[in-house]
Length: 221
Ligand code: ADP
Ligand code: ADP
Image 1 (tube, rainbow, N blue to C red):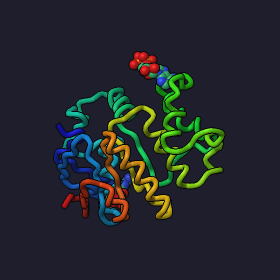
Image 2: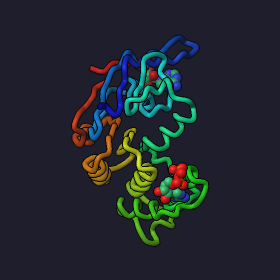
Image 3: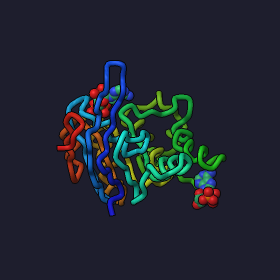
C-alpha cells in the first residue's frame, strides 16, 4: 500500500496575468519506507508538489491519498490532525522560533497538541539523537551554527512521531561537510522506517535517496 498516492493532481494558480499550471496531471505512488528525491529546474513545480503531498494546499483537480485515505474527503479537523501527526516538515531556512531555546523549539509542537509542557522527555531525547544535549539545548537559534539549527529542526519535525518526513532543500543553506552530516541523519531515519520525500537541487544530496523523480514544467518525467 502506498503511504502517499497522487492521482492526476493538477494545481493551477490564477494570477492577474492568467493561469499558471504549476502541476500538470501528476500521478505518483510513494511506498512506506521509501526515500524519494524530487529534482528539476527552478520553477518546475517542486515546492508545489511537496506542498500537495503535505496537504498544505488543495489540488485544483485530482486526488491525494495519505495512508489510503482521500484527503478530499477529510474534514478540516481531520486534515489538521493529519498534518500534525503524520507529516514532519524540514525547510531550507530551518524556520526555528528565534525567541525560544532549542529545547523549547522542539517542545513547542507538543505544547500545541497537548496544551501543556512535555512530560514524556521526548524533546530532550530527540535533541540527543541529533547530537545536541546538556547546556547546549538552552541556547537560542541565533547562537548556534546552521548545521546545528537544522538538527534542531529535524528533532522538532520528529516530535509527534510522523511516518512521513518532507524536506524542502534541507541542505540548501549548508556547506558540503555539514550537508553530509545532515543527510546521514535523514538516511538513518529512513533506515529506521520513516518515509522521506526531499526536494533538492544538489545531485550529491539526491544520492542519499532510493529513487529520484524529475519534474519539468509541472510534469513528472
Ligand atoms: P520550484 O519549487 O520547482 O521552483 P514552484 O512549485 O515554486 O517551483 O513553482 C512552480 C510554478 O508555479 C512557477 O511558475 C511559479 O512561479 C508558480 N507559482 C508557485 N507558487 C505560486 C503562487 N502562490 N502563486 C502564483 N504562482 C505560483
Ligand atoms: P489522546 O487521549 O489525545 O490520545 P493522551 O493525553 O492520552 O492523548 O496522550 C497520548 C500520548 O501522548 C501518551 O503516550 C502520553 O504519554 C503522551 N503525552 C501526553 N501529554 C503529553 C505532553 N504534554 N508531552 C508529550 N507527550 C504527551
